Amino acid sequence: MKRLLKGGRVVDPVNGIDGVQDVLIDGDRIARVGRDLPADGAEIVELRPELVVCPGFIDMHVHLREPGQEHKETVATGAAAAVAGGFTAVACMPNTSPVNDNANVTAYILGKAAEAGLARVYPIGAVSRGSKGELMADIAELRQAGCVAITDDGRPVSTALLLRRAMEYAGMFGMPVIEHCEDPSLKGDAVAHEGYQAAALGLRGMPGACEALGVERGVLLSELTGSAFHVAHMSARASLRAVRKGKEAGIAVTCEVAPHHFTLTDEALAAPVAYDTNTKMNPPLREAADRDAMLAGIADGTVDVIATDHAPHHYDEKQVEFDRAPFGIIGLETAVSLSLDRLVHAGRIRLPRLVELLSVNPARILRLPGGPLAAGAPADLTVLAPELKVRVEAAAMRSRSKNTPFDGWELRGGVAATIVGGRTLYVNSAVAGLKL
Image (cartoon, helix red, strand yellow):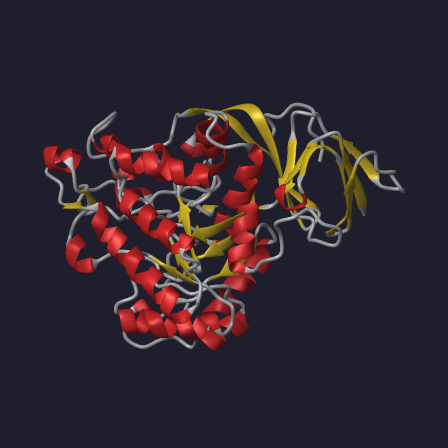
């Protein structure tokens, strides 16, 4: 089946496109992109000019929890949340139960994704067996099974030697090592950012240096090995400095920032509700200077990716004392609106830069199909409604868990539709006249 999307603003930074153009979809592929394309027997879909057609967004840092923690999320519910959030593909972390450290678990995740038939799911394998930091996982086996990167996310790789060997091994397959950067001895049993807010609330704090030490280690080992190193969920200004210096030296280092780290600060620990466990994540919400540094890095190009670190937890698990609650919040269904509202409409970046952060760069780093809207590429498209008024409603989210600090927020800009492999998998009913 052919469909011709006409009249929308097409944003494709790879090909230098930013203007009203048509997109011809033939089956599961893009056939042509250009002005005034002939219908050629295709179904014509008229888009209003305020809608923006982008290459499909990719979230390279999500936790789908399956296998083993299906009460929090499943591959199917996570993939449903992804398409509702405008993501055509997600890369899922290995800290499942059992850990994704072998081909059997990888195959199980891919099988569940195929059954769901929603967003594309790309598994990420563990660096070490069981993510215990002792013996390296069989990276060749994980690669052959379909993993696109390796990480012990949730904890840092235990030693510099193991991280070096993992980077050398993964580099043979063109896979990045993604690191949860943290010095465990400096973190201890901390639950918040070390600063005034934690002290006032009586919470144990971890300084930004705790993260930055891990970033410095990874950058040095990337220089030593020549292999790709990616900093997950960066939050501290000292980490940004380390990444910037590494890039300036030509080292193969990239990084991502989550929306909660460029929108919130540790002041959220105290207000509007003190000790709200939906403000507990790792790395923690940091002080304003760190948040502002993340915004600056996004604007100046140092930050490569916006990723959600979607971390679903059951209601009961979060309804405990702050110290006892698990780290993490969901993010798949709020990331695009937060990015449009706080980055694009705030004048910090333009839409082509947002597409780089959410589509082009994740595809490049993980070596995935996607990025440009080129003839023959998969017909994975994210359609944005930049002026749409959005109210975040946790209860209405498709994720199985509802742990978000953004419930009730009113934002400007949202997702109009999500198309994966030529199939329209999500249409926002709040966008009038949209028939995809």
